[in-house]
Amino acid sequence: MGKLFLVLLVGTLAVPFGSYAADTLSGSVRVIDGDTLAIGTTRVRIFGIDAPEADQTCTTMQGAKWKCGAWVSAEVEKRFGGRQATCEPMAVDRYGRTVARCHVNGEDIGATLVSEGLAFAYRQYSQDYVLAEKGAAVRDVGLHASQMQTPSEFRGLKAAFPATPG
Image 1: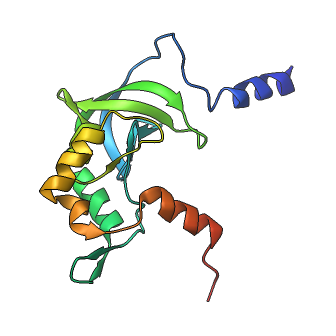
Image 2: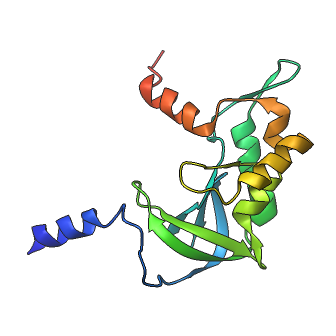
């Protein structure tokens, strides 16, 4: 019985919640990084966006490198840290995080982050924020004022070439 339950539980971790309504999550926001929050004990990956990794760097148009991932995390903390959010779960990702749309006082966190140039539309999973991203790019705001790898490219290269102790 125990093995069967474990297999069934593990098998559901990457499956969308489907047609039934999952409980909404509500609580104070703790920022993990640019696209991941904690609401209580639940880690929440914001649906439809992709933000730089905390250790990711960008390059200004003048050629100076800067810590854009840390900057994004700090900006998300300034805007949303400690505020009350309501999140509508949509799925659970392969890391066990709840993927959800989250709002603070009716403001869609994902839309805000993309429109302010702090994250990108994650086209692989959603087209919801593509126009907001294009608007931010036209205005040259946030990350759009620098050159950078997409967060997914950065993660892929990091996985392919892990750092070795010096």
